[in-house]
Length: 320
Ligand SMILES: NC(=O)c1ccc[n+]([C@@H]2O[C@H](COP(=O)([O-])OP(=O)(O)OC[C@H]3O[C@@H](n4cnc5c(N)ncnc54)[C@H](O)[C@@H]3O)[C@@H](O)[C@H]2O)c1
Image 1: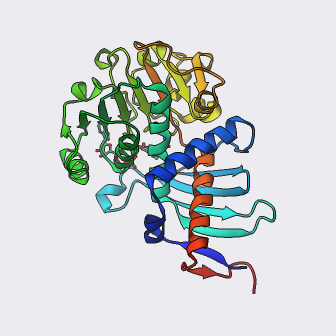
Image 2: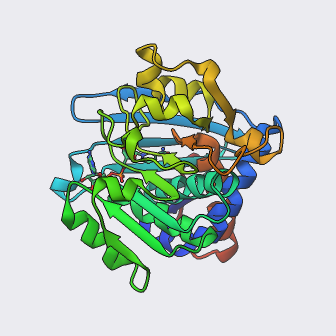
């Protein structure tokens, strides 16, 4: 049996944000209903960056993503985050596909945040603030634009060139470079930096804001002042991962926030086990670490699409 090999160009042609939003929400629903398996990701930390191994299984699908985060890469013309997925038949273990997952990672991360905003942000949210204008910021914006109609989109980055690139990628939208404080004063705020010191200050955050805390996905990273978490309804993608490596990891390790203060998982909110925001004034935070069920669900979608199209490269990896 051949194994499909899908490179970046193949994935580009097979990936859409509307599909990603559907598949990622469905994956969270499946998993919250007990129809998935996912051990916490394993980290391999090196001097200039880290690697994560992310295995998971969902009904009819299994696989593992191998992904790096090397924040200095853009200065060498490489993305900070690159990934591949090995997608297997859960019944036999056969490797059905090996695919580039760099864009899949960015799309599914954007989708998870927009889905969190769909359940947690005020329905009348009409301003979006993006802090950090790198690779992930593009798909954060793309995903939120599918679900919300914004009158104003504000972007802050330490690099104005990164902001200009993001703005140029979304012609025709009301998007502009702003100060950090102005960007923070938005209905929905996405933080997408690799920062290890809080960038988002409590004094800037307005009542009723929803924050997608995306950047902190490894031990020692943090983007939000812990006082924001103390006041907010904190929703995580995965309890174990968030406590060890998500936005709450530093405050938890310093005793400034306790895991008992987490309000819910995103899956619990999606299946209605816990209600979403309690009132118009609540501050809600989605602490995203990135979960392997998102990747495996996406791999299944991409594999099925590619198999149906039938014109992609295959190799006999296992058999003679
Ligand atoms: N939660 C998830 O599922 C998930 C998935 C992928 C990536 N990430 C994380 O998201 C972060 C961003 O990833 P990326 O691929 O966009 O990286 P990137 O290098 O492409 O972009 C990061 C941007 O943040 C900017 N920046 C750095 N420090 C800043 C600060 N203090 N204030 C404002 N801007 C700042 C940089 O100038 C850069 O433009 C990383 O920490 C990565 O590990 C999380």
